[in-house]
Picture 1 (cartoon, rainbow, N blue to C red):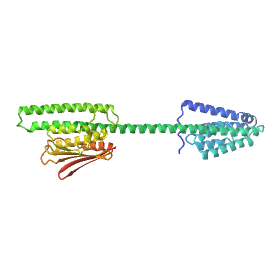
Picture 2: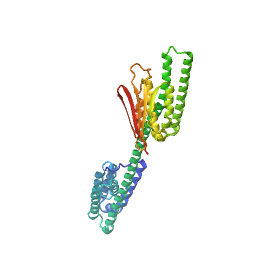
Picture 3: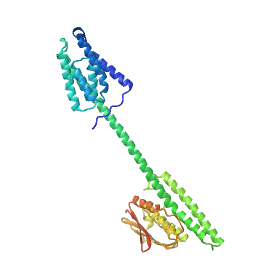
Picture 4: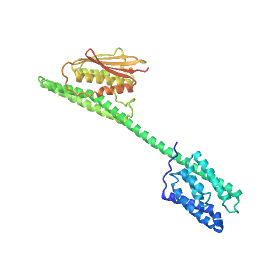
Length: 383
């Protein structure tokens, strides 16, 4: 895993770090600087120049952490004023939390400090006191740096988790929006296509039938008005359901189910459809609401398709099944050889029915056999 990216420093962040670095250098060099001024003044100025150069070099510690830490550690073997920049460079290196980099640089810093004391240091320096102090300073610097690096890594992990959670939330919102759009389209199609097809059929009759009496025209116009009014009523109901219900599995009433099928069949016959129904001793009132609702929509769509594409043909509806097994619904109608009423074909109804059947745990199929269109759905019927 790559080390965490250090956050950008503000102007005050640069200032207090450099002030602390200068303070550490002054403390580490103070005793040696007095001895250098009195005994080796050239070394004093050389030490000061090396310290200033290290103070400039340490500005690149984030871009080249190992190189800067190595250079400042080596410089500390000949300069006491490099103590501050060397400490800052070692601290910055420790934030990366890589032991293969930290341990060699810690040993190098300790050895170079030992060389400065034993080879070039003033004779009055007490090595018994200085060496443990130097080791403690190096250990504290590394420990503090690793703590800061661990905190940075934690913050980076939390930020990445927050970004991931935000991305996942956006994806879930988009998926929910897509699902809701499909659900609205399915509900609108199932509810309105049936009513509008009735309006289209009766309006087409008024268009093509020139021999109708005024009473028949008045009756048909009234039927169109009633059907359009019922379509508006259904539209208000489904919009109310879509606003209140967040899921498709348990819709709010009023929603049709299997017990409403007799009313649907009676309405189809009343509007002139030749309909043959066979329930095979299935008690429609015992069908669970969710399964019954899916079966109702399939039969409704089958009747609508037959009315649009094959008017005046015989439509047969068969409902079979029992609790604990499956509920099977089949709608059959002969294909029309002549022209239809010109109702546009969308193909979205079957797509919506397939989605509805899959949501209910069933399967839907349609086929043409012996010049007959067959729409069939199989739904699980729990005990």
